[in-house]
Image 1 (spheres, one colour):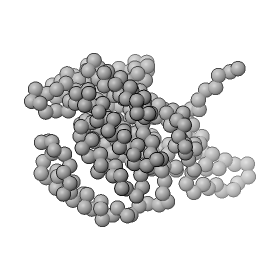
Image 2: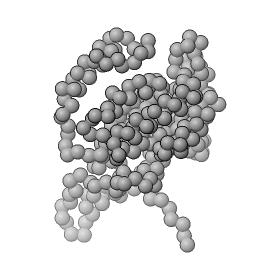
Image 3: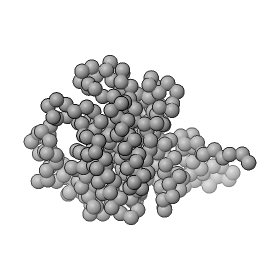
Image 4: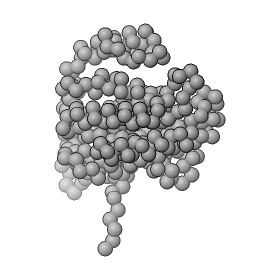
Length: 286
């Protein structure tokens, strides 16, 4: 049996359930829905786990890529980079027959929480966080020569809203503590040549961001999720990846139209619909 996590918050029952799930997964590992598409994996804590709820950014990405790629959710609420590193080989095995084309990774918000007096809790020291993220990035890049990686920096938060919603359950979470983690992650991305979405700054550039971007002070509203989608697609569009993973560059699966003269094909309708989500980049007038 594989050891899942050596953390006392995971009970023996949890480990047994995970073992049964793993055994069932192994039995069906050769089965898949065809034909094969590029795979985009979202890997992270609750910002990822909740990304398919209430107009979330994960659901919108799945919509944008609905005819071109499979968006796969691997979100684990409450986790930090330490937990993620411990299960990395299980979530992203190097011997998998199919490797992801793109992995979008988010950790850091929980890592930046203050240390708990008990010595437990989500806090991870900044130096360890960066080392963990470096190992995660290097592992993902080693999966295949076609696997691309995007890190997302920790976003800011609404401290007052957190206090009102969670009370004493989450104490001490602050922008002052989170900012060094966001800045250090951006520096790491430059060091290891990984693309990054700078959520720390892009969220704060929005009008009235404190009151419009969070459901509880931490997690995203639909408005904030729209910002995430636009920033992710901007990174993908501008990246010099070969092949490109932008939705307009990927082949549409089973293209089809009715052959009616002077009418839009279904493929063209798909482009028109997605352009509403991602307006084309503006071109400066000469």
